[in-house]
Each structure stands twice: as C-alpha cells, then as structure tokens.
Length: 103
Image 1 (cartoon, rainbow, N blue to C red):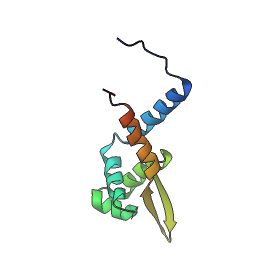
Image 2 (image 1 turned 30 degrees about the horizontal axis):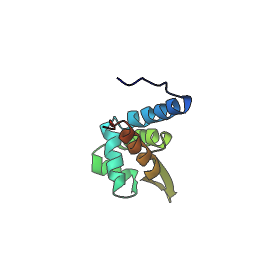
Image 3 (image 1 turned 180 degrees about the horizontal axis):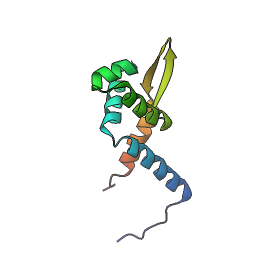
C-alpha cells in the first residue's frame, strides 16, 4: 500500500470550490437550466416555458447559479438573458476527471 501524503492548503481550497460547484449541480431544476443554456442564451420566460416552472422558482435557481459563477445574466431591454459560464463548468468537469483513479 502506498504511503499517503497530506493535502496542502491550495488543494483544500480547490476541493472546497469543487464541493460548492457540485452542490449547485445536485438539483434537477438547476441541471435543467444548465441543459437549456447549453443550447444557447435564454431569458427567464423561455426557461420557465421549457421547464414548466414558475418565474420565482427559476429566478431563485438562477440566483444561486449566478452566485456560484456558473451562469451570467446580461440585460437586454426589459429582460435579462442568461448564458452558462463555460470556463467554470469546464473547471468542474476537470475536477471530476481528477477524482478518477489513475490505474
């Protein structure tokens, strides 16, 4: 059995960031929003229609995804158009890849 090594502060910070991101991905509504945004920018109305949910519910989940830096919103007239943050989603995917056994 290989000797275990201690995890440094920078790795602990990275693990905490992954945990926050993975927690955001643990909700089916937020996954649905991200799935819709993978097809391109959407406003809240389009997300509500596609997911069959009311505006307050979608807005709540978008707020959590914004705070987690997984989506951004841009004002277009009276509405806000949301897009996914590809870099941050790719970072989470890379985190999953790092958890895979090397052998």
